[in-house]
Each structure stands twice: as C-alpha cells, then as structure tokens.
Length: 423
Image (cartoon, rainbow, N blue to C red; front, side, top):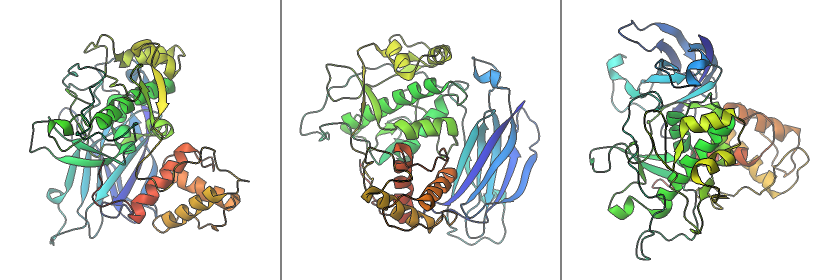
C-alpha cells in the first residue's frame, strides 16, 4: 500500500459558496462483505469549505501502470453533515497513490423539517469504477467527421466555441426518464478524464487523452449532434455512444491541471476547415478500435517519452492539426494572451483584482487587494491563496489556466451567469 491524498470541498448547491464548519466523516468502502470502518470522524471544514491533505491508504502504483485484475485505486465513503442542509454521502470516492484527489460535495438547503438526523435521510451519490477497470459497453464506432446540418438547423457558428455548460443526459439517448445535468464545460472534461484515464499515467499521455476528449465533445457541440436528432441535450454519459460521465465524482490534480491548461484545444483533420475531430478511442485491451487511439497504447508511448502531439498523430494520422477555440462563452473577459505577474500594470490586472475581491466575499481566506491595476506582492499573494484553494500550482502568476479559473469562480459566486444557460 501507498499513501493517497484527499481534499474535500463543501459547497451550497444554490449559491456555489463554501460552507464553513461542516462535519465530515470518512469511511472505508466495504469490499467483499467487509464491515465499514471509520477512518476520520468529526472533521470540520475551514472558511473555504475544505478539509485538506487527508492521507489515506491506496494500492501500490504498479497496479495502474498496466492492466490488472486488482483495482488500482482505493474507494472511500465521504459523509457531510451541517445544520440547515440535507446531509450527503459520496459512496466510492477514488484515491490513487501519490496523487491529490479532490471531492466536491454540494449540499442542498433543507426543504422539510426533520426531528433527528438519520443516514436514511442522506443524499447519496454512487461513484462507479473507472472504465479501464470496470465493465462498460464498448464505443459503437461512427464516422469521425459529421455532415453539418443545413442553415435552417441549429448550427450558427463559424468556428468551434467552448460552451459555458454541457448538458449531459445520464443514460441512453432514448431513455426519457434519465436525468439531464447542466455541467460547466471544464468540470465535464475533468469528470470524463477522471473516469476514463488513470491519474498516475505520464503527463503527456494525460494531455493526449484530454485533448481527444475535448475534441470529441466539441464535435458534439459544434454539429449539435443530438439536438438535430430531436433531443434536448449535448451528450450522453454512456460509453456506447460518448464518454463515461459519473455525476459528482472526484477529480485528480494531475488531470485537473492538464484540463485547466488546454481546455479549449482540439484536433481536426484537413480538408475539413472548421469541425473538431470526433476523436474516438478504446482501451486497447478489453476492446479494439482500428484507426483510433488506444488508451493503453497512449500510455506506452508516454512511457517512451513521446509528447502529446506525437501520441495523437501516431493514432489519428500525421495530417491532424491542433487548434484552440478562440471564444470561451460565459466568461466576462477573455484571457489577454500574456501572463500577469509582479510588475504588470494594465486594465487586465485591475480586472483580476476586482474579481478576486468579489470572490473573497465567499472565500475570506483570499486577502482583499487594492484595485489599482498594479500587480504587486499583495496581488500575487491573493492569487497564490486562490490557486491553493482551487488546486492550481501556487505560482502567484495569472496564466491561462489561472485566468479562466478565476473567471469561473467569479461567475459562480456572483451569479452573473444566466439562470437558464444555453449552448
């Protein structure tokens, strides 16, 4: 066994604001009839709604480096209780060795009175296995490039745009009783990557798989694939047709940072000038997909030192090109193109200062800064604190990933996003 690391963040589901003083209990996940055991009890969240750096046992890293009959991650039950809210339990939070795992737990305000707390009253989220370990239907192959609908259809964009939300249908397309979830785009990509890739894999392998997931997803968005079939969602959670999405699952820092770095990057194949490639893949062990990427194959290439471009070209062809969607919807101001750091002085610094001050009303650990457009030590310290809370490298520099994460949290806590978002 090796150590894994867990941070739990508790949020008010209506306001996206952290909940201070919530009680957190961590239990083992019962395996093969074993009794459930308490690992941590009566932990209290801080003023950022978090308990951090919990150290928990996880299987040896060797089990995630090659196909194995032994589950390569440990599973835990995370219970959250706080006055005025429905209690929640996440059954199956996953931990890999050496990796930081982040579990968000949204709580709903109580809508009915209860005389006493009972586990029967809890909101329960069940987290299924990673697709590389669990048993899921293989992807049904389809054309990697889609015919665009006529001008009278849904598509009105000249180029791919990263949407603010992805509408995920949690079931087969024809299942009308399945839930639709509105998920922020980056959170959707992190969810899928955490469900389909092992977070202990080489960084360049993770990059390659994340770009394939983004490209596939943006193809569904750009072509309005499901909406043009009469459905009211963007994508499904089923491996038969799309990617595995597990509602309210935990993310891993190694995957989260990669997504934050490249969430608007996709691949396309000339001569198609606009359409992101529907980059299909399979694991390469339990199922085969000629002409597409295999996940274990991408891991082997990463082990050999290939970068993500080389990995993706190996599987999808030397002719593919890499592009970034120029527009990210739902963001107040787009990234200026250059990092902001100590010594910077411009209107973009003032934007970041204004947004950090707004965020600090919900996250008081972030110090207030003077909104003067001058990036001094106090602004750098506020940025570092923000980065620590939200799982970014604590550089104190506002780069691409930090800019858009600040924008995301700013929009969430100030509720300037539409209550009825569209994509």
